[in-house]
Image (tube, rainbow, N blue to C red; front, side, top):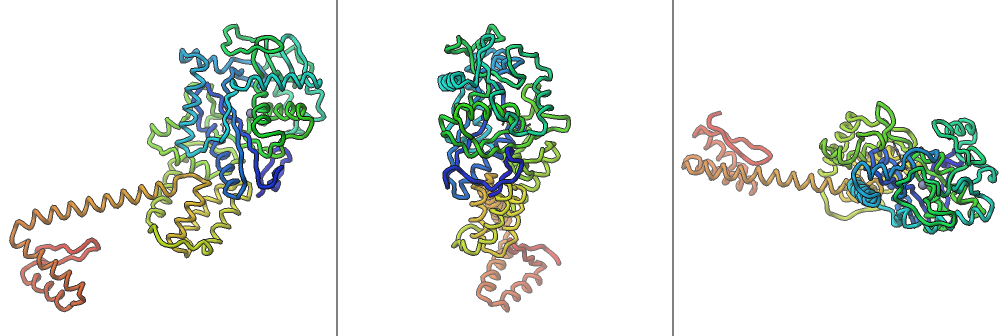
Length: 487
Ligand code: AMP
Ligand code: ZN
């Protein structure tokens, strides 16, 4: 499989430290508000990646943090404490806010068929590990204490800007922009590992540490959780593109300094979902959530389908019109799958071409748009309905847009409609049969159907002629025979 690697800026052949096994880490949500559908684009694409790796035969072990420590709203270690902001807004404690929005995140994931990683760690449950890591970084000369805080010393690294070597100056400006200069830092890119000098007197979450009561910097959690749950060699690290700098850059700095060797070989970044008026943001008042999609009558899986139609390395513009188009395509696809007849033997050998088309698409840097095209090609293929349904089941184990469930529901709805129509027709006939002339017509229709079944077409024609002589014209329809008075 070829996968774009943000470290090398090329589509690399996917390799793992241990053959057949993948360790995968995902930066989890900051739980001070609902996830917006932009955040969820990242989680959808990461979910597809995990599922495809399993589909391709890897044994995947995946971990994710939940950022419930009160981190600051800016990347540059400044701004407001996000959790505290949420708590104040909703008159709850910080831990109540964290629990509420963690549950809400999992509920959104369930609606979008996003599998929760097998290991999920709230940052607040891992503070001892963060302290242990910071202690070692100080002991090894990679961190220093200044003004009550512990900083990572980026000057001790051979290379700091691992993702964007060309634009070091731009990034350095980015770090400075809008950020109050922190006089404690020895180098402009140094970052905080542990705060004891809280900017907020009412900071709720604080822990005892060798450096005094305080709280961790926001990058240390992912390093410590990843190292402790997935080991010292990580195969794949995921997140939205905004995480590349400074968050992932700092994760790499502190993890490799701590380990004394290279840590994660492949970095998977999902580009942003934007609206026409710019970036989505949780900190801006109103924002797009899964609940809002549902309120407007959209199945959340239509949003997942919308995301799959684009490549994860292209930014995607969200519009209601775009979502409507995705819904039309999704509904058509489901209608066509619903028209396939379930049951019968599957001939896996006959499906080779379709399996290859799907794998080729996904092996091509997770080209989900091409994989969706492969679904339409299955419909057109000269294979049995059983084969087609088997393929849809396999592909949907990765794409997870509920193809078979939605098709089964559609089939049930059609069967229900048919049964209702037949019941209504039978009731109408029973009512009409109260008239002896109508009863005679229906008796003749039944006799004609029996004659046709017995291939006695001469008698069937005779019955039609006899009725016509009485002024009754028979009309044959796919649903059965009806009549009209007159010609
Ligand atoms: P947060 O809850 O802010 O920590 O973000 C959770 C995840 O969503 C991270 O991986 C972010 O990089 C990612 N993310 C944030 N904004 C967007 C966006 N507009 N589109 C896609 N992913 C995003
Ligand atoms: Zn992270």
